[in-house]
Length: 189
Image 1: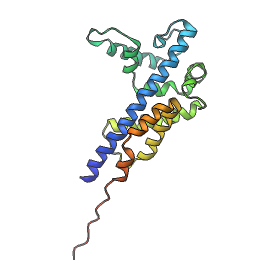
Image 2: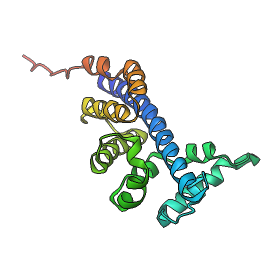
Image 3: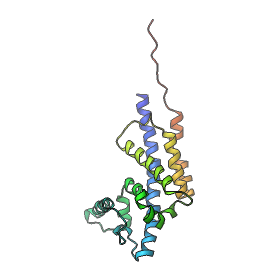
Image 4: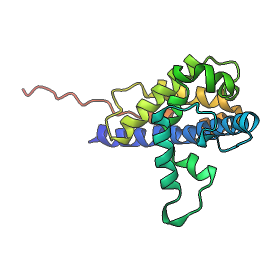
């Protein structure tokens, strides 16, 4: 039971850190995409895809996000649409298929000095961990410290000030230090 309780706590702590990173990531990519689309197509709503740069899968994700953003009669705004796009959407905007278009066109600016492949790999690891957390899978047998370090690293690529804010609030390290030790039953005499 102690391990189960600890697992829930460390999962929540890592989930909070990943949540902060996801918001930072989507906002940074949205800003770059908006500026790029405005410069290139005189249309800041990049998700309308005025240059036909996005895949059919991305179009489907955006269509669903637009529906969710306008439920209950709310007016569509870019911020609402962006908030409805999941981490997987943002991860795949960093994939090889967008290297010559979105990455070289604008997204590289969100990650000064980083290579697309490195960024995609790091965000991919975090996306997979976030999905495992969302399905309440155990984290006690996963590299939680490495995942935390990767999240903080990616945040630093995007914004050092926000990285420091996320790092200061992350509870993963103290929880890792408090991981319960297995109780080994003693043989009966």
